[in-house]
Image 1 (cartoon, rainbow, N blue to C red):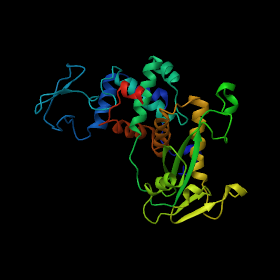
Image 2 (cartoon, one colour; image 1 turned 180 degrees about the horizontal axis):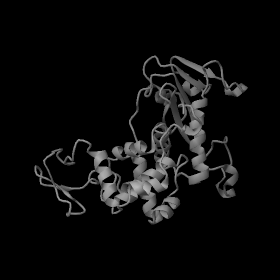
Image 3 (tube, one colour; image 1 turned 90 degrees about the vertical axis):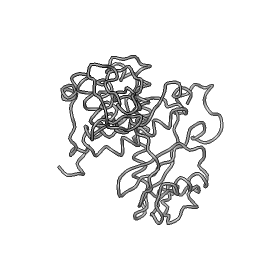
Image 4 (cartoon, rainbow, N blue to C red; image 1 turned 90 degrees about the horizontal axis):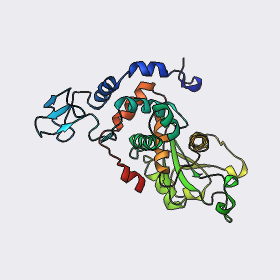
Length: 311
């Protein structure tokens, strides 16, 4: 089936039944995580030596570095560091969060994985951290837009409704950019939607000379090689000028907000945005490849519970 098939049908997915056969226990999950982290053989996470002694019976740290004399496991120095959850649970959580295109709530993870809701919430945020990536320069053409995240005013208690301002009052701005050539996005929470902020957002993520398409928001006035589509007069496509691609990403993000999470606190909104952008960018890949990509992104990163709740 061609690459334009509805629902990305060209991808090789796996069912829950197949998943449980691939990961029947912690031992098979551990072997898979080891393969993702060290495809060339186990290396010490402290000194990078490959002079490693394997001690299968010495759980939970079955490896010892002969150079620096430190014990470690595949979790050491990753987002799984100090986690008491079995590696099979981590593998199943990766599957659920990669295949749930509108996100997976901590309550669902709690029920599906048989862990507490608090543990599921921390687990999900650690996996979201693996999707974090630095700014990449898009060669273009690119579409740029901004949106606002927050609860619907009509659903709020009267005491919490913003009494003044536009429909964006009390909401948080998020800026996004989509590269048409690679069909990938970047998005981030921003404090303002003024010219320095929005123009700087575009400059930091586009290669020199890249063609940029936006709506008529004045925040993009300083952007070079720039064409505008005028939504204010109901113009949504003008030749090659449109922002339909990035707006489809906003639609997916907001379906996750309203349909799955119901609320994303400002403290953690950036993590949810990273999750949706990261999952969006790897959606053409097979399911196991998606899981492997995120598993590799866990190495070299840490997120303690204290750091998470302190924001």
